[in-house]
Length: 357
Image (cartoon, rainbow, N blue to C red; front, side, top):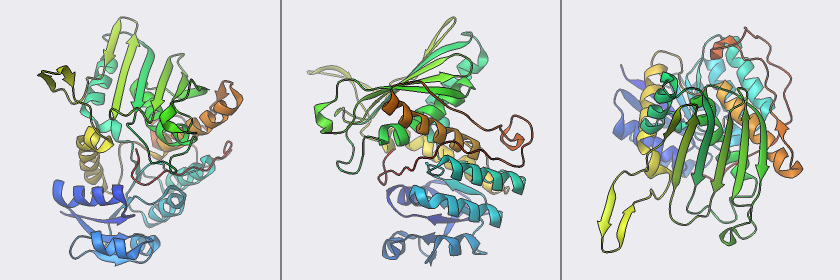
C-alpha cells in the first residue's frame, strides 16, 4: 500500500523532504502541501498534490494519512496537537517545540492517546557511523563509557540570522540527543564556557564549550564552532574503561597529490547526513504505515529542550545548571505510567534560521 503524506512547510528542509519522499523512497506519495507562502507551496508541490491554505486543514484532510512538519518552531505545538487529535503519525523536524511547557503538553496529549504518533528529526541516530559506534558500546567489549568527546563545526552560519543563543538552543540539541542515545543515559546538569572569540563571528559568541553531566557520572564535552571556514566537521569519540571508539572521518576518501595528503570535508549538513535522512524517512514511513512512530520520541524532544534551557542559563551564570525532568511515561519505554505530565521547568523561546542544522 502507498502511504499518503502531507507536508507542512516548504522551505529548504521541507523541499528536500518532498524530494526524498517522491524520488528516493517507495510506497509513499505526497498528496498535500501547506505553507504560509502559498505561492511557494504551489511551486514546489508534486504534480497532483493539493495545496492547503492552513496546516490545520491539511492535517484534518481525509486524503492525508501521515504528516511531515517542517514549519518554524513556534508553530509546531499546535500542529503536533492537531495531528495527535486526528490520530495521524507525524514526523516533526527539530525543534519539537520551543518551550519545555509546550513539550509537556504534547507529551500529555500523546500519552492520553495511548500510542506513539510523533517522531522527532534527530537524524544522527540513523547515520551508519553513529549506529556502528552505538553497537560497539552496547556490546560492552570496552567496558562502561566514561567520557564522550563530541565536535560540531560549521564552515559558516547566516550572518544576522544566527544569534549567540543558537549554538546552545539549536545546534547543541543534536549533540545532546546523540549523547543520551549512545550512552543510554540522561543529562542531569550543564556547564558552558566561552573561550576566546573567533574574529569571523563578529559579535557572535563563538566558539563555545559545553559540559554535559550524565546521570551515570559520565561526562560529555561538546565543542561548537560555527565559523571555522573549512567545512562541516562532525566528530565523536567515546572513552571507556578498556579502550575508545570513535566516528570515522567523512568522507573516507584520502587524496594524495602535489599538495600533500588530505581528507575532504563535507561542505554542509546535507552532504554529511544525506544517507541518514534517507534512512530516517524509510523507518518513519514504515512505522507510519502501521499507524505509529519509532525513532526519537516526544520524550527525546522534551529532553533536548531542557538541556538547551539549562545551557542558556549556564552561559549567563557560569555555574552548573541542573536539568530536572518529569517522570518518564511508560509509553516512551521506561518509568511508571504517568497520565498527567505536569510541572514544566523554566521556559525559553527558540527558533532557527530556515535550513540550518
